Amino acid sequence: MKISCTVVLDFTDTESARMISHATKIDNMDFVKTKIKGKQIIATITSSSVSSMLHTLDDYLACVSVAETVGE
Image (cartoon, rainbow, N blue to C red):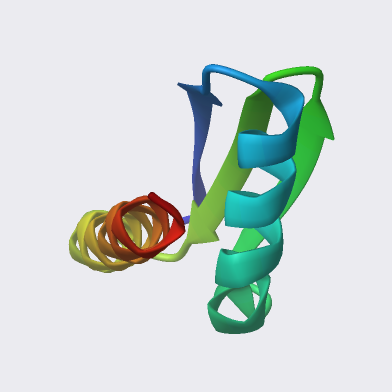
């Protein structure tokens, strides 16, 4: 089974979206594909199971949270 999830993250400005995307890109590997659209990061996550999807989504959002905190 293949599972995919798309997460759209809205930021206050384009520069914030770009910086957070850049900061989290190294951890994405093949599981998370991201693109920037204006002030948004659009992340598509793929996985082979529900539990793996939840784990990957949790990790990705934790990395975004850390990047946001460091960037303040």
